[in-house]
Length: 408
Image (cartoon, rainbow, N blue to C red; front, top):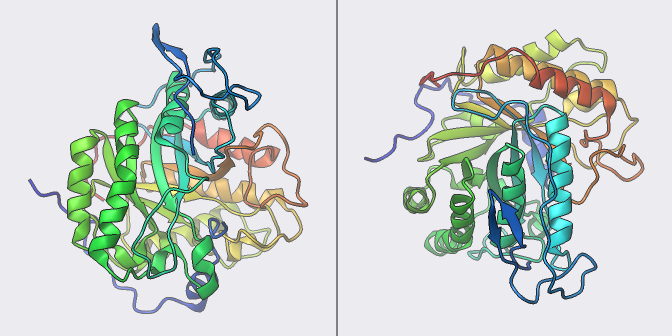
């Protein structure tokens, strides 16, 4: 049976998007506008051994014939079940072909333990893929794209910790910046060729997601200009033949607000960077009102089939006006970030949404270390005590989740 397109409710038209909305996408104001492989490790999981292919690298980066074992990781408070909220973070992973399997496993355990310490029950693994300019029809893996084998290794460790997992490829924008491009305004010269190339790219990752029992595969992220294209019907249909979990799409917040996001998927996420024009000392309730004004432009009331796939803000003065500003480094203000997190969590609960993933943690970082504010993005939250306290409070709240509600 052909799947209905999301969302199903009538949409209140938004005829004009204000300057504060339009400008960020002209100048590239988004946290991901910056911008393979070795073998499967020797693992012992559930009493079964998985051999490490000959010639893989050891912990010192040299060829190794020894085996490695997955060290013990902490377990989540309560494993996610259908109807429960997804409490998680976006783990952004730019792989390095020189990294050994041991290093990748070590980092995965580090992040699993950190997330469990926040009382998370979910994690979304975002990683880059590459293209040419805005008109390019070719999608490719680069050195920074994790191999499906590396991805499988990380998923095994997260599942050992009891974390719900989402796989989320996202287009790197480095090659698009020369012409003020971003992933949401690409215009492939040949759509047939672009979709064929894209499907070829994601196929091995769908297979890895299926073999490691991931919960969700995000079939596309912030591809505004391609939303509603009929080619997606084939892409999603083919994906569902390979992957038995949930196939989702993550829309950018401007596209979500302006009109229906017509994608043939069962679940919609929002990369939510709604600007709220208030002072740095605004109350949590004021921030909640600002978010609700944006969401009400689309649909009032509960949104149980919507996940906040990305929520984040810079820990700095003036951040409420442009929450997704990755580049600017104004004076650090951790209370701004913590209050934003508290407000977003309140919105998720009041609107009965399916959960939230905080942007972000970087795979190569130590999340237990305070960010170096001379070089780190202000959007980093790991190591910021006020922000972590707000996240823990959110993740340990008594919100039971959207349940089995079917409206959106």
